[in-house]
Length: 113
Length: 113
Image 1 (cartoon, chains in turn yellow, cyan):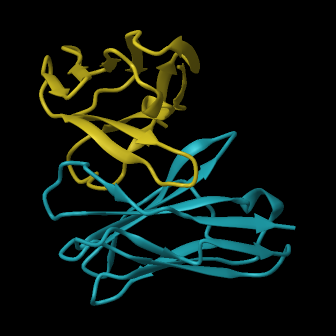
Image 2 (cartoon, chains in turn red, green; image 1 turned 120 degrees about the vertical axis):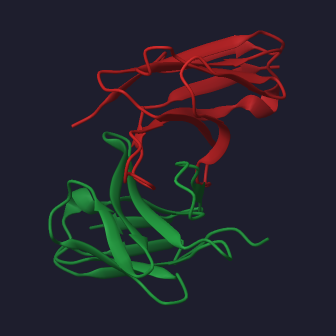
């Protein structure tokens, strides 16, 4: 089945640094999404991308939908301690997929104050 | 607006038993999806329901089943539990628009002994 390769698997950074993570797929997706999960909670949607080449920001977060529709990246600028968590990319093929998303393995982000 | 509510939050079962998990979606959301999250396999799609009908199904054995009621609440059932079924089971709801934007609950943590 479809698989998403997300990298890096983990990141240890200092507060104030910028962060970049990406996701690649062997298949095309119509929608790319980025979620964040904190301990004891379910994933929370950060950004959704709907068009190839689209660049979308949400505060200090910026994400892009790759022009090949097989990749996406997420940048976090000026990281703060509350950015700690696991970040997941997810792709939706479109059509009748609706709630059927394929998730990456996640990037564990640790921010040192 | 209340979020997605899952019950129970934690449960312990033994091999061979069966379990039923419950999910109440966000008010107005008619689509409910279920995911299994494990350290080894990550987030895996189980199935999705809309208007009491299963719309999509993941690659899980028939021991995993679900249903949706007329008020959009959903349940999933796992019969003949195996040790490998230990996982966090996440429910997510979404609106009728096919955007892939899911709103997750906090999950039900199942431990099989």
